[in-house]
Structures are given as C-alpha cells and as structure tokens.
Length: 628
Ligand SMILES: [Zn+2]
Ligand SMILES: [Zn+2]
Image: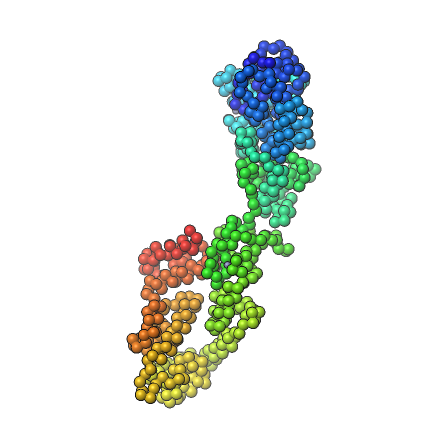
C-alpha cells in the first residue's frame, strides 16, 4: 500500500510516474518500492506495455480516482499498438496488462516477430526538458517520445535525443527517473534535412492522433482493403487487385528515401519487403509505424483510414447520366448501378452503365474530369425506347442521315438495327432517288440552268396559283418537259396536287386547299425543327420550303387552319435566338465541351449586339445543363 501517488503529467509514461514515486517515497532500494506498488519485488519494470496494473490499483491510496483503463489509455503505449489490432486481440492484450500475464503481450502484438526494435535508450526533447525544469522543477519521460519512429518532439518540432537511461537496464526491476544529468546532449546536435523533417513531423502527428483518440478497432482485412482500393485509385493495382509491385516499391522509396526509412527501421529490400507482407492476405500484424508510413505515402489520413471506407470509384460517384439521346431523361443522372470490368487487353477499367430505359453503354475509364461522365466508348444495348423511336422515324420516312442523327448513332448502325427489327424502310429507296436526282441534275447541268427552269416553273405557278398541274403544263410545255426529264423529283414536289383544285364554277375550294397546305406546312415545320442547325420558322421560310411563299404571304387569311398553325409555330428574333442557344448547348455537351458563355454564343451564332440582352437567359440555360 502506498500513501501517495504522484499526479501524472501530460503524456507521462506510467514507468515515469513510478520512477518519480520511487524518488519521493524515500525508499533506498527499488525492492521496497516494488513491494509498495505491487506487493512483491519481482515485477519487471516495463516502459511501453506494463502489466500487473490491477496489483498497482489495489495498492493506490484510498479515494483515488484512477482506473486500469485510464492508466492504460493515457500513460502506456497501448493505444498506439492496439490501433492496428483486431478488437479481440486488443482486448486480450489489455487484459494481460491489467493482470499478471504480461509475458505474452509482445507475442500477441506480433512485436517479437517485427523487425522494428525498441529504442535502446529513453529519448528526450531538450526544449521540453528546459521548460519542465523551470515550470515543474523535475523532468519526466514522455510517452510519445519513446515510440520507435518518432524522431522529433511534437511540441517543438525539434529532434529527439537519446538519454543515458537504457530502456532495458541491467537491473530489470529498476525505475529510473528522467533527470538533467541523464538527459544531456552527448553527441553533436542533430540536424535533419527539410525532407526528413517534413516526413518525420507528419508521422509524429499521426502517432499523436493514435495516442489521443480512441480509434474503432478494425480487422486486419479492413486495412488491407483500404490500402488496396487506394492503390487502385493511384494506378498501383488493377481492378482485380493485382499490385504492380515494382512500380509501387520504386514510388515508395522515392517518396521517403533510404535515410528516413533506415531511421524508421523500415527499410525495404528484396529480402525484407514488409510492404508486400502487409498487403498479402495473411494473419500477420504489421508494426504501427509501418502502417503510418504506408498510409502517408498513399495520402490517406489516419482518421480516414479508420473511419472512412475507401472505395475504388474509377467513374466517380453515382448517379450517372443516361446517354440515350431519344429518352426524355437524356443526360439526366439517373443510373445508380454500374458494373466494373477489365478488358482482357486493356489495363483500364471499363464501366457498364445500365439505365432502366434499356439503354446500356460502356466507358473505358478512369474518368479524369467531370465531362468524362458524358462520354461513352460503346453502346451495348439500345433498349425499347430507342427502338421505338427508330420505328417511328422510319415510318415518318425521315432520311437515313437524319434518323441516325436523332438516334445518336451512325447510319450503318441505323441500317443494322432496322434490319434486325425487320422494319420497312423508305430511306434506302428515297435517298437513292432523291440523291441521284439532285446529283444528276447538278452534275449534268450548270446550276444556273437548273435554277432558271425551276424559277420559270415557280413563276408560272405564281401567276396561276389556282391552276392544276396539267393546266400549268399546257401554259409552258418547254419548262415542264425539261423539268420532267431532268428534275422530276423537284417538279413533283413543286406542282399542285394532281387532284384538281379548281371546281367547275371556277371557284377555289379554299377549305380543301387549307387542309392540304396545312399538311404541307406541318411537314415542313417538323423538318425544320429536326434538322441539325436551327432554321428560323417564319411564314416566308416555311413558304419557300413548300414552294408556296407568295400564297402564304398574300392569302393566309383564306387559310385559317394553316394560319393558326403558323401563328403558333413562327418565331420572333428572341425565340429563335433562345432556340439556337438550346441547340448550341446540346451540341457542345455532345462534344463533351465545357459550357462557357462565349462558347455557347459562338456556337449559336449570337451576334455581339444581342449578347448582353440574352445574357440572363443564356446563363440560366447553361446552369440548368450543368445540373447546378
Ligand atoms: Zn519538446
Ligand atoms: Zn435511360
């Protein structure tokens, strides 16, 4: 039983507290002190992980507030070693420290097998020693300073020095005090290079963290997985977990240098590669200092290592956008599951993105920048929405090129799928005829000649807007015949329908004309809206397109259905500018370009004079499309 117990200093080793007790007790022999503390004189004095704490507790003065857990956590190196032990392992060690079974502790921790040896002498910081001497009137052994691999004092960021007190003395029962005469700088002053200082400070900070924070116990596999996932992120391991050992070793050695690793007792060579042992799946523990070295190298903070599951995400965080150009949710981030794969010939990860709409695309990763999320390497499956759109477009007799554009694929893919789905296609024939016609006309005759005949024909129609095709032919057979022979397709498109539009009373059936023209106008507007670069929808532009510009310009009032439709569809300057902005944004996004204001303006062809006026609208659109 002892009558007093020195108040522990901050981060003081239990060993040091007992050494101070010994001096203050006035006991001449250490055996008397051992009897006071433990009730026996044969307990070995241990610096880092002492045992028999229960015996000590039993002999402390009455009314003290200490618990074994308190002493172990705050005044021994237990938290440092236990951090990297599985919980059942750690609690056995703690039990051994509380009880009398101290002999097996080092084996349990795996320190016997470790090549990181204890410091030979207690270490001290000269600055701490000076301060303590003037503030406390005595020195004490700091816990953190005794940890192998801690080269500097965390308070002063200055090198630590060996004292003259051996950690394992001649008398193994002795507790030896830190004192000015045993804490003198004997060798020349230490001077570490900046590189070593920086690394040493980082390691010491991490040790401090482990000593002062109770970290949640993790399994050995937890650490291995954390490391492996980070290695994947850094490209030192592939998706399957195969580690590029040579590259890794080179980078590691380069990061620390031999000198520092030697000071940390953690050199790596072919005979002793503790890094490989640590990453291999086995049951061996690794010295905490080596965990810290590796962690720092990988850029993982000690807190994250324990608390934040590192996942290898070559394609970033979910959700990912669906890239099905015909889906209403095109570009919306709605894909939450991806499958990761490795191409047999590729070292890069491949992500398989499956959307509920049936569209599946692949991308070779990893992604480097945000816009990579909108890229696809290959489309694996188009799905029903896309296929329906293909059906719809072929039924509407869109050209092959336009169909391909709308579906976001090349024409060959459109052909392939149309065949696969057994679709009746028109574009093959139509494009042949149309293109052949245009080409022959343009090849065989100078453009001016073609234009002249077309112009003449249109003039006749303008002069006799109510005449049928046959009547017009009679009016100018020469023009009709030339066009009929050389430009028939155009002629057909620019002639009145065969049905006579004239009744016998020579009165125009405006109602029927309105229906027909409305139909034509609708088709033309539809085409104009789906064509690549936006065309402004005006009465003139639509009229020109269907070859009835004068009629629309002059007689629209007689065509109520057409008029109502055009009123709804025609665009003012601003409407059209906004549509161009929307188009430009989509185009830039498809090209994976960053959406900046000037780029959008340039693509949309917005002249400088209008840019200020449109700025608010343009920024809003860009924001929406950036998902902000
Ligand atoms: Zn210090
Ligand atoms: Zn989708």
